[in-house]
Length: 544
Image (cartoon, rainbow, N blue to C red):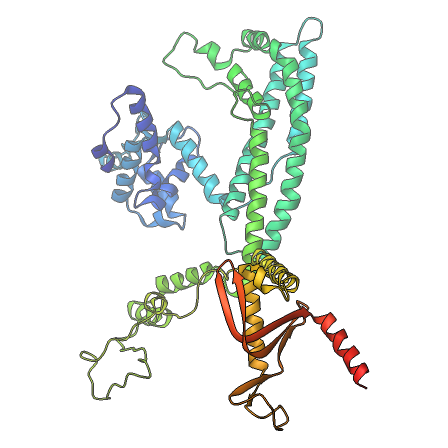
């Protein structure tokens, strides 16, 4: 057998564990469906040993995978199950009327305890593995009531009656175990649903109702009952050791019968040991610093709500084409599984575009002219974009970047503009204060720059006149060469105006921190724009 090659662990306890786990081997064997049907035949009886003909007769009436087995094949299956520990050989005497009948009936088999328990769990899993099990939350109220009644019995005069206390303890633990099992099964199913990211609209709506309504009701019930149950356990806890001793003295059960035979192991009913009560208390209170089951229940509910929001976001994104293709891929896989080999090739071709080799090209630059007779082997290489080379698509991937906020840059630029305007205004004020006295004033660099800027503008606006003519073309006594007429510029924003006049045999010297500037035959006149406009207006009135 394959299991013999692996070898059990060296420690005695590990060897026992290995032997027990081997009983699950029939569920992963190649003939697992036949093994399961055979085990069902044995589980349908109690303390009954069956021979090969008996099992064969019962299998023939079924319609499963084991219905076609013959006697030799069935014997092989039964021997294998016996080696794994699921079946035991019977010691009953075989009554046969002939040698042939004896040979067929000499090997009889019966169910082992471990095999029966495993098969029972298998049938439960196969019957309702994908179903959502209802949570028996109403049992919490019965557990609370049972604890309070048991506490009142313990504290009454004379103590509790052992038989009555045993009945209440057995009922209480049956109710609690059923509730805890239903909680685990339901949240396992919930985790299975949460792991899916291909829920459509209808499934999402049902899941939302399940989570928001049913889970909320469960959580509220547990949150309401847990402190009350914990309080009842705190009252009952000091009396439990003595109560369990009195119950064992009156109703010892199998432990009392097999007390002198330590080789017979007994699994006691729930509630008869103090460890059972510690497990019950740890479900509702944090006794070891690892958190109670109630706390884990709240955390699991929060994770379920987060998964619900994640599915909602995914469904919103699906409107833009970003949705799961899980259902489509499963449907395609089913087509492959059911198709003949030649049809599977056609499906792959249609689904994935797996056609014969094709030559594809990217058009070169328009400036590059390649003759039609040039071979692709010797022609120029065209640069293929990375997205097209790796994914076969030019579409951009990833999220669209958000619009960049330029508020800080705008504020900085505005501040710099205000500072430049203030510096120019200060330079204009400096020029107005130095007007008519440039020979004794040393200008700053900004003031000199502004003066040169105004001077360039004034010279650009000047009218150049030939010698012997004025602005109207009439004769003038300026002599030969060129003259300057209307050499003037103004800056309305700064409120300053510069007038340039040409005077032969004169010069203007501008002193500044950057050096001295000499302007030959030019006289500069700077004045405020408003004062200049008022002066021109008064001159016009006097002339009229």
